[in-house]
Structure formats: structure tokens, C-alpha cells
Amino acid sequence: MAFDLTALKQRARRVKIDLIALSLATRDPRTPWYAKLIIAGCVAYALSPVDVIPDFIPVLGLVDDILFIPVAIWLARSLVPAAVLGDCRARAEQVAAGARMRRITRLAAIALWLAVVLVLGILVYYAA
Image (cartoon, rainbow, N blue to C red; front, side):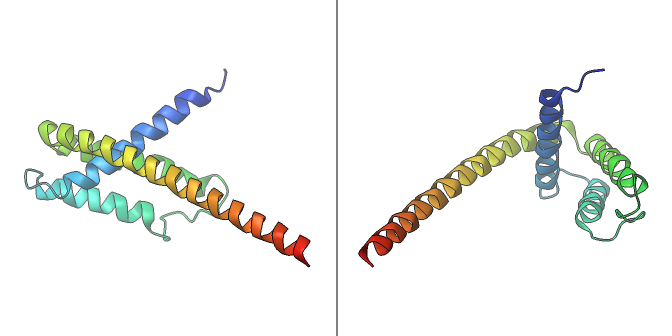
């Protein structure tokens, strides 16, 4: 059995888009209250430092995250109306693309500042 890193990256990207779409769906008035409750619980559990099984317990600590979060995402997706989920996924793609551009812009700004600091350091070194 070969390990396919590309498929894993695509799966992670789909999960990220789904999470963004679900968070957008909570703000949509067409989403039922019980779906909003499931989404809020999923996000709270994913971000909470408190787990059912603590992460420091080998293997078992990560199993609850690996099982619970995908099941909660699946349940939330099934409770959100298809039209709402479609609209939110389209918006989530735009949000993710914007986040990627912000990350690239941040990296470019950091590289520019590092270059300026390096040039100033060289000038100070040779001036002394």
C-alpha cells in the first residue's frame, strides 16, 4: 500500500473548505437552528483544549479527534440545506483563496523586511 501525499492534501483542503462553508452556513438564516447547534459544537470541540480523551495519551488521544470531528462535519453537512451548503461552499472557496493571497503577501513583506535588515546590518558592519 503506497502513501499518496497528494490525495491527503486534497482531502485536507476539502475538509478546510467544508469547515469554512459550515461556519458561513451558521450565519445564513436558511440554516435550521439544530444544524447551527451541531456546527457550533463541532467547532467548539475542535478548538477546545479539553478533549474527551486527552491528546497526551498515545494513540487513543488522537483517535477521538480523528473520529469525532469528521462525523460531526458529516452530520452538520447533512443537516444544512443543499442550496445553503452550495452557496456557502462557493463563498468558502473565495475566502480560502483570499487567505492564500494574504499569506503570500505576508511572506513577501517578511522577506522584504529581512532583506532590509540584512542590508542595514552589512552597512553597519562595514561602516564600523
